[in-house]
Structures are given as structure tokens and as C-alpha cells.
Length: 302
Image 1: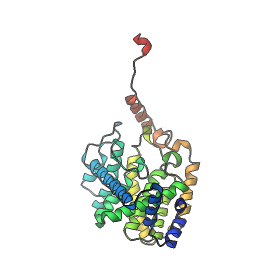
Image 2: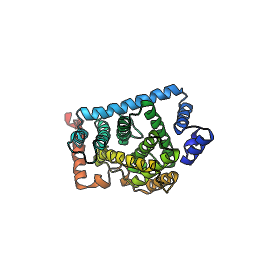
Image 3: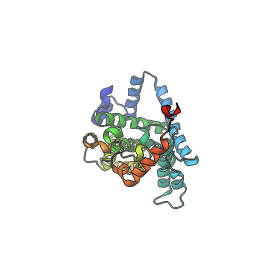
Image 4: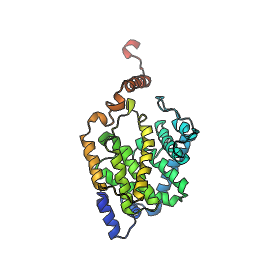
């Protein structure tokens, strides 16, 4: 069934010809690839969603200070701030994305969806979506399958790795997965799901991967928060029936083309962008010095 996830057009045609929902086709694919039962797939999805929720709650309740010091309980500060810029729901959305990603930066347990660097996006989106719309777990798990199908196609046509395609490949892909899942969970059509993915990608094309000191902390954590905002805005636009104009497959092709032409210093090497600023270089030197273990000189010991 690997042909199923070579393009969004092919995915839709397969589902239509076999009278399947989008998530049902992904479920079939998972069963065939892993050689397990559908019940086992559902149990695995349930466990993944529990870990996502735990990451959100851990990030909002426990001490979140990274070894470098660049991450210092930002999620809790946002969550507890007394003034909501737009609404309390938006404030929760942003803080939950920050929380799950901070857990990753502080070496906690997360779900890499699709990568650890983007691990705050789906948890922040799905936790908040379920709360606002009172969705049951089954619907959220179906949304996770939709996200998985989206990621499989992006992986085939472009990349999910920052080292290959820049941050557009990591946070961009995760935001696209989340946006498509939102539209599905709220009753959108297949075309609306795909429009949400296309609009999200259009908003995140060209985003570079420039981690300060080579750590998945700055700007990675705050980009997770920005990505959930884009995911939700794209879903809102798509649900209203606004056409993405550029088809989703062509948007992913553009992502792949941009990623392949992006200079290596903008692809997780910590040699460009924010990592190359004066402050970024100072932080890098400080962090590297902290992490160096000074071993005794064997010759001197003699």
C-alpha cells in the first residue's frame, strides 16, 4: 500500500474508489506495514495521545529549566499571565505547545510528531481542540491518523528533517498535520483537510533551522507556539471553504525544492541565522565550555 501515500491526489482517489474515510486508509496502511491488528494500532495511538497530554501537563506543573539555561519555565509564565492577548483559549493553546516542547528540551518524554523538535505542536493543538469542542478520544485518535497520512506524503515528496529541509520541514510539517487534523475533527471535507495543509505550508515555506548552540531550544520552542497559531488559522480558513489556490501536492513540491536549494548553514548546522548572531555565538561558547569534561593528562600523571 506504499503507493497510497505518494501524493494527496492519489490518497483521495484511493479513498473514493474504495469508499473509505481518510483515517480508515491510514489505519489499513499501519496494519499492513506493522503486521498487527487494528486494536493494537488504536491502543498505540491512545498511548501516544496520553504521552502528549502528560507532556503538556508536566510542562505546566514541573520545573522546566534546561541545562543551557535558555529554557526557563516559559510555558507556565504564558499560561498564568493575567492578560490574554486574544482569548483565554488562545493563551492556553500557546502555553500548551510551549509546555510540551519545553519537556523535550529538558530531556523529558514526548512524542516525536513528526520530530522531537516539533513535539509541542500536535499536543498543544489536540489538547486544546478536545477541550474547546468536547471531542471524545476516538475522534482525536482518528485525527492523529489523518496527521500521520499527511506526514507520510510530506516525507515522500519533501522531508520531515530540519537537517534536510530546514525548520519548514519540522515545524511546518507538524503544523500541517495539526491543521488537517483540526479540520477533520470538526467535520471538514477531504478537500478542506487538504486545503488546510496547503495553506499551512504556504505560510511556513522557507523557514530555516538555526538552533542556537546546536540545541533544540532557541528558537525551536517559540516556533512551536507560532506553528500552532498558524495551524489553527489555516484550519479556520479552510473550514470556511477558502481555496488554497495552489494544490496541496504542489505546495509540498515547493517545500522540497526550497529545502534542497537552502544553504547548509540554514539546515540544523548552527552556522547561520540566529545561531550566528553575536549573542548566539556567546551562548554557544558558554554552553560548550560547560559541557566539556576535563580529563587528566596521562603523561602528566606519570
